[in-house]
Structure formats: structure tokens, C-alpha cells
Length: 520
Image (tube, rainbow, N blue to C red; front, side):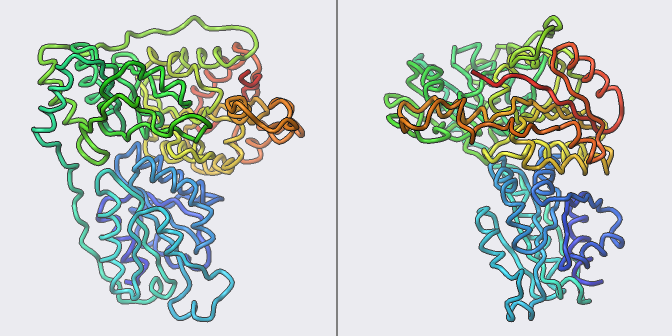
């Protein structure tokens, strides 16, 4: 076999089933090798940022890595934004980047670049086989690195001649190692902190936001009065009736200060110590109160679920978790608002749905509205780089074709990766995208108001033309239809309910352009 086939076969032997790609000339032998490796499904994207974001969404739902295939350094550069989000989500991704033939780069052709430097920005390992015989070994090592807890983006650079030359050999995939457990002395020390009776907050993240971790955290809270908070942006949260629900950390420092007011101890499990998303004048970067101690129950990459369960068994041995009762609001009516669109989604959300939350300023009411809805998973944009939601939906739908995917997408975010709709149509994925269309960069208007001082000539944020998207207005219905996705427009709660119900009942992708006023 050639190097390309040995690379792909080694990944398949290690459990990889899907490759998301926007290939070029240097990747043609890898594309051709897909015919020889039918166990690996190739999914085409029109833009590399869609391919990389889709690999992230797939990994979060399938709990195993997908692969990407990108075209040289510029293709990797196009995909870096959502690989950054993947890194922040700790998603396992095998990132394959094609390169010129080993002898060709000496001549500095137009697409020559330092691919290793670009890939190194992701802080994961980078490998580059120099001959076909080494591709299997490098593929196995890359896969092993990707699934190492808590998960990471691992890159293999494939020169074109390494792909096309014969002599490829299979590598031996290594089974992923379990996340390391927390030592008993740490559990005992944290239990003593809780038993001390001082005001304590417990911040949970990562795998701790699935059922077992949520229930353990709730038992601790019920028995001790500890305040439980969810990290601001999480890779996957299990939510809905029958599960505990906890508030997320606020976006702005003042919000977090209120959540942690009076706390003397902050315990971290599967998350990082809370820091301000941006710097603001006269506000600290670290949001833990100055007179509070921070305690790490489980670092990111350790088994936070096991640590929470063991801690709950110590401090709440006979306590049951407090779970959310099924609850659906009355169906709202009238023009769409920042509250009632959330109520419509909450009312109609199907059981076992996957919700993609890239709502930004339009989704503040979503968590409360859906807490008592049918059980569902929520995937969030984790790295702050916009344009993640629609690719996440592609990957989630490929990973779980039997589950409805609901992508809740701010209009500005949608435009970064709107070509994801084409892949949804091509693959006939069951994705319903709701565009929250306020025709503005509303989050920047909020940010502007948050700063106490700004240039006197800057004017009011709602009048600044650089924060306005209404001239010309973007017609998301026509955009979706151009990519082969049926679409409609809703401006009232009744219209949204009718169109959302219809979209969920029909197979394949749909888009709803939900028009509303921006947040004040």
C-alpha cells in the first residue's frame, strides 16, 4: 500500500470513522485512498473552518476523535479558528495537513509555508513522516496523543510524495488511557473544607457536567449548602427534566462577583479558575474573591466525575440529588423577543435533542427556559472564536444521525461559516438552524456600554455604523435556499412555533430566520 492508505487504515484500526475535509492537490492521494478504506467516511466542506468545527462537534457527541484533512498551510490557517475552539473544548481531533513533496519545498513554491509552526499554535503534538514506511507509526502516535485525557488536537503533516509512494506500513493503535484519578488525601482535604461550614462555591466543568457529575455535585450542595456553578463555556452539558441544573458563571466580572459574594472557599472540579473573558478597567483578571482560597478537587484532565462521586459519598452519603421537574411554559404569542423565542424552543424541544448554543447576546434566557424541557445535550462555543455553531451542528448530526440537532445561531456568528448549510444539505443531516437575527453586533454594543469611558466622539453604541448589520440586510432565507436548505422567516412567536414544529417533523436540514430587536 502507499503512504496515504497506511495512514488512513491505521486511523480506522484505531476507531476513527469520519474524516471532514476541504482537500487540494497535495491531498489527492489521501482522497483516493478513501476508496481503498471504505470504513472511513469522507465528509466534504466548502471551507476548512467548517471541517475543523465539524470534527469538534463529532468528537463531543461520539466521545471519540474524527479526522480532518486540510490543504497545506493556508488551508490549516483557514481552519485554525475552530481548531482553537476545539482545543479549548479539549476535543480529540486528528488533524491531517497535506504538504508539498519533500523535495519540492526547497524551491519555495507559492503555497509553501511553515505548517509545523501554524500547527504548534494549537499546543498539541505535530508529526511529519518523511517516508511511506513511517506513516502508520506516526498515524498511531497522533491518534494516541489526540485521545490522551482530557483530549487535544494532534497534527500529522503529510508530504505529497510520502502519500503517493509505496511501502506504507500499518501502525499499531494504542488504546486510550483512562483519566488519572484524584488521590484520596485530596478528597479528604476538600471534604474537611466543606465540613468547616464556611461559605463555599463549587465550580464544575468538562465531563462533570454530565449526569453522574451533576448528581454528585447536587448531593454535595443539598447536604452542605455549597453553591454549585457551571463553568462559563462547556464542551457538553446534559440538561433537562430529571437532572440537576446549576447556573453558569457570568460573562462579566460584576456578575461573577455577585455569584461568589461572601465565599471563603472556591473548589474547582474539571474546570479552570474563573478569569474575566476580557480585561476591563478597574477590574481584576482573576474573579475569585481576594479573601477566598481556591482548592483544586480535580484538575482538567483528571477524573472529575469520580472525584465528585467520592466527595459526595463522604459529605453527603445519604443525600439524594435535587433534580429539575418537567416543566414547559405556556406557548407565548406576539412579536419575537429575547425571552419568548427561548420559551418556544423550550416548549417544542424534542427528547434527546442536541442543542448547539452560539446565541451570544440573544440567549440569556435560554438556560432557565429549557431547564425543565425534555432531556437534551448542549454544545457551546468554548474558545470565544465566533463561527463555531453551524459546523458543530454538522459534526453532531454526523455522529448521531438518529438524534435531532437544533442549532441556535446568532446572525453575526452564522456569517463566518454559513457554508456549513451546504454540507448539511449534501449529507441530508437532521439539523434545524434558528438564526437569531437582530441585524446588529449586539454583543459589541453591550461591551461598549460596559466600559465606563470611551472617546467623546464615539457616539452611542447603537448608532455606530460598524456595529450595525442592517445595511444591507442579510437575507438568510435566500442564503439557505442557495445552499439547498429549505428556509422560512418568523417574526412572531406563533410563526416560530409553527415553523419549528414543521422543521422537526421533516427529515433533512431546515433554517428559520427569527427576526427580533437586539438586547437593549
